[in-house]
Length: 238
Length: 289
Image (cartoon, rainbow over all chains, first blue to last red; front, top):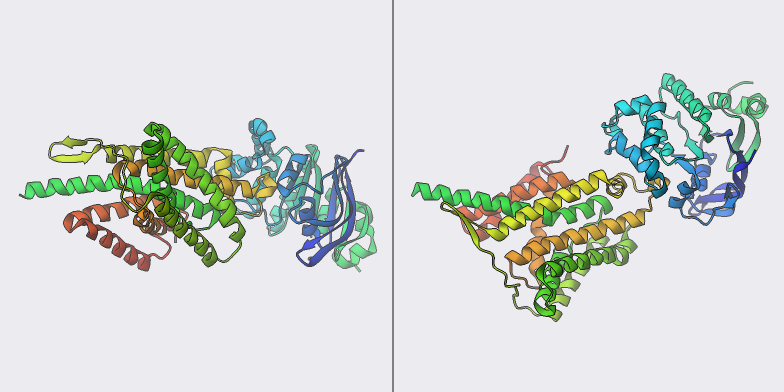
């Protein structure tokens, strides 16, 4: 399978504080991978580095064989990388429809606005019902759907999901993982960051364990689920 | 006698409504810039002044036809607004609000002094006088009616632009979350520049209406600036609908207050009302608490 995203030896941080130390990872087209790890391990920073929201101080970023480390943040989406940020970050005082429209802001995305809107609505029928409602007035689960829908509006190849289950009620978490499963089967390549390790490892093909800004372990989802490191530290199994 | 009394009061109310439309347009650009960029252009009145002089100069000195002079004036001040953002605001975008206020205050005095040097202190006008319309005993000046209609139309166009277009939606979105914008392919710097240009264009559009009604002088920005600020604050800074309504409230105080006392007293009453209103509702009359 063709490599979609490749990170080689990437270091990044905020101001004087370094959060990632020489991280390398690869995602093949059509694959779903997870990055797991404790709070503060640098998972969100990793996604922010991939999206160029923070500068990469060392290493290379490649999308479909093209190095893009020198592009500014607002051009990353045109490579086919859509990022659903931590905490959803919808525009609370815009309607659901206006939030979705913002996802199609890119000039190349506008001609396909109607079809993609229909697709987002078919994935999340709730969004159609709520299209005129202010995004900030919806429940957490609905907001997460809207955030994912907004990312899909750009017609991405690769979807970066940052803690999609965070802050949701347990029942809603289940549905959220169902949704992500459906997005996978719709052909999107997915990179997901999660604390909900047991759940996410059932969903993805492979996973990376990130600790203190370094990749500690990587392998198939089953391997990580079985590994002692993960079992003891994160699943509470002794 | 009591019959006459009512007619003049009605005339004052009608003039207040017409003036309200003009003030609504005047405050729109200032409010938009604050709502989006969260920087107060203290020099907004001076942009209006520059717009008035540009139109006067192009029309009276260069000899452009008035509509062309107005069009070029609007484009010029739009560029000036963009330049103001790029060279003055951008370096202090993340500085304390007081510093932002001070730099735009500096621009205020610079523009005022520059206008004095270039055009002198005498009052100037474009010398176009439109007749008054009479309806029974009420007479209303045609320029005020034109001003009102154009102002309302411009506000409507701005509203449609902000609610229906991609760039307009981005302008509203960026005020809610600046840092997430790049993830949607939006360069915040570009949106700020576009917003500033629109702010300048709206100021100059107001100039087009003012040159028909008022004489210009280098300090005319100060005649409008304070009224525009109290309108924006009363409406809830950055709240465009609130600002629109507040413009009509303040215009009525000025117009009807001026009718009962003397015209200068209209402003005194309007400002007194403003102070009282802010005591009672600090976030503005139309704030959603």
